[in-house]
Amino acid sequence: MSAIYQEGKEPHPKERRIVFKNVDREGWDTSLAMYETEGGYDQLKKAVGMEPGAITDEVKKAGLRGRGGAGFPAGVKWGFLPPNNDKPVYLICNADESEPGTFKDRYIIHQDPHQLIEGMAIACFAVGANLAYIYIREEFPEGAQTLEKAIEEAHEKGYLGKNVLGSGFDLEIYVHRGAGAYICGEETGLIESLEGKRPYPRIKPPYFPAAMGLYLCPTIVNNVETLCHVKHILEVGGEEWSRIGTPNNTGTRILCVSGDVKKPGYYEVEVGSVTMGELINDLCGGLKEGRSLKAVIPGGSSAKVLRADEVFTVGRGDDTRELTIWDIPMDFDTLAACGSMAGSGGVIVIDDSRSISWVLNNINNFYAHESCGQCTPCREGSLWMKKITDRVVAGNASPSDIDTLDNVARNIDGSTICAFGVACSWPTESFIDKFRDELVSDTNLELEGELLNAEAVTAAANLR
Amino acid sequence: MSLEIPTELEKEVDERITHYPVSKRSAVLPVLHTLQHHFGFIDEEAIEWTASKLELEPIKVLEVVTFYPGFRQSAPGKYHVRVCRTLSCAMAGSYELMESICEKTGIDRSGVTHHDPIAVSPDGKFSIEFAECLASCGTGPVCLVNDDFHEAVSDVDGLLKQYK
Image 1 (cartoon, rainbow over the protein chains, first blue to last red):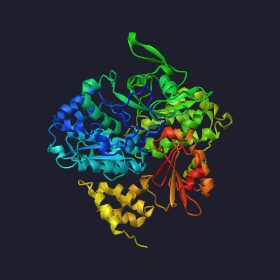
Image 2: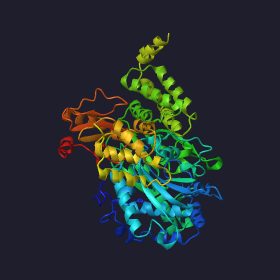
Image 3: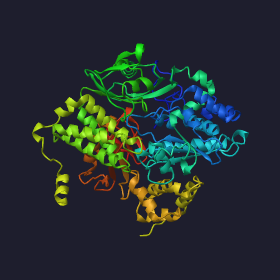
Image 4: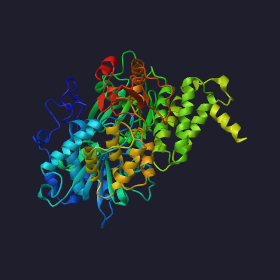
């Protein structure tokens, strides 16, 4: 992963780069000296002179919503720390970026590590954390090194360590590498993993990290992009920052587009300032020659799929509007009103050359591989969904298999400890809701009624 | 064969453990990473060494090794390739990339299973497995070769030539 400027990667005019200001920037490098040439760590200097609670207030005023997937307001999350707490408080940066379709934190980590460290240091000061970890996915080996080097540099300059900038505040940040498990992106799974265990998510309540997180102490877990924004919020003030974007969907966010477009890539835009149509046609250069749009997965592979010819009714009362897929502003609330979610910002575009069965099967393979196995509906169900779509793709499924598939998905959704269950069932549920005819057309009516699963036949025979 | 831990390696492990002042058990993953980086995979002795280093029962280490796809219990090739299998890379041709690398290196993936996902070339130079989403969906197909990241891979000969 190159940390230097790459030609032809200039930002699109519709972008507004704040967090990604230094990504692909000519002449930029990851050193502290470079970072300091443009006011690096000035916001940390400002922060340590403030009341910690005042920083949280700024983040609340900004309305910053988490960029990891759930879109939960970060300031409110910080506010959940118990008052009169006498236990240590920890902060964890979730850098386990692994939601299929998402590739934004990678570039922050590899090309602008000090921005993240400054954001983290400010957040730690605000919540009173003296020990923080960056949980980075194992598949970013170079990123882990880049961060460790940046931490070392920041240490030497007194931005980290004992008595940060003479404030009396101590802070150590360590990089902790995962080991290839998607479930570690779930905050309580991440915490278990950081404790050296299998990353089985914890049940909430009572294990809300803010109350009982790492080592059962109050813990804040925030995404990379979210923590970077903290620095920029402090720079301009929460109220000013909240004017970026649209009401309740404030700030900028990085949209990652992949799949069937001419120019896949990352685009930092004011939240809600571009529509799906502008994103695909302007920023990404449109669909490939001669192709038409079939579907879009708008917020990482867990987000419910949107069909190209759907009409979405959003708003209430007099404010009710009808939108086509092209009209949808890329914000949290509208995507939710359209029955999907903005999620992690990963937009996967699917054109008419793709088989829906193949796409769903690829996604089901992912979730079957990544289920942690703790809850039965998810462990068994994700594998069943994969096996059924394996059969559909191979032409060995019967039409009623699609009903079985639907039934399996709906029995996972809502029956598990963590949100993975929902995440793995939504693709199947939404693909069946919207593309049932195509899925059924890939099945074989002649196979109806046959018991096709040879393993199940053998197992049943052994039981008798 | 008994596990020999060079002094330098043990120093590195000891340093990593200091990152977890609250609980030594938190160092399981970093210690295993350090050992795997050195030995190529985690065998029973590495598990026992880690357990005694961190004052844990060996099962507490084994359960971690068997859970995480990032830890290997058998020897990979000199160069271990991980090809991203997930949707955006698959749309960009990662299955074809996997096939092409296997063909050119003589790797036979027919015996690969969920619990034994790695296949090694007959000369032991390359090994390969599919990885789930490597978070570079805009530049697929992508793969990791040891710690090197490769994007938009189209020239497989050129890729393999870099690894002698």
